Image (tube, rainbow, N blue to C red; front, side, top):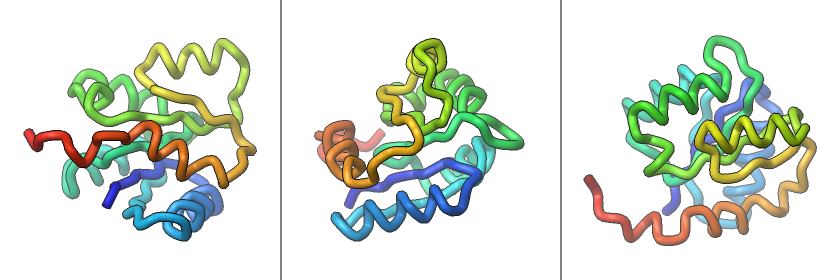
Length: 130
């Protein structure tokens, strides 16, 4: 079972991810409202196979989360997809430079989520645990 962490301050967006992913495949979806909650969840429950990450959040935003995670090597081990309304080319580039593997602009078609998960986590379950 693939473990997905959705980090977004909008409960509606988190619910959209949860419904879209769990209705199609047997994914385990965890949620966090900001980058700090995401770090806490990872520390207590272990690394997910994929992270969907909003940029604009209180407490710790998505770019701060990526900077902190990159320092700990997390973004090298776990693919991160930024999901944001910030869709200018420079916003996308900033996210990719910070370590994201993909960028999804809001609003998006939730039907793309399962294939995106599969593409970015291919082989994740076969990785040796460290």
